[in-house]
Image 1 (tube, helix red, strand yellow):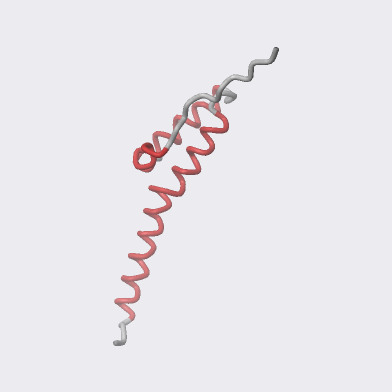
Image 2 (cartoon, rainbow, N blue to C red):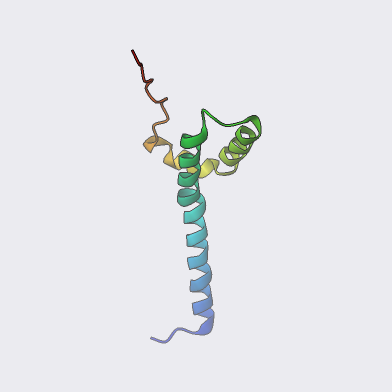
Length: 80
């Protein structure tokens, strides 16, 4: 079977859409969750506004990943 150039272009466009959708729904929200987990309790007000923007922008992906995330606060270290 020989694919015409039109079919190859369609396949390239479809593959590009799949890669972009995977990045938007899985890869970038995972990076946002990692960033939020690191900086949530020490962020400044401007950084917190940026965090809220990231959550708003990547909301569909964060919603997909939310069942697998545990964002409980870390236990306190009690020193005697």
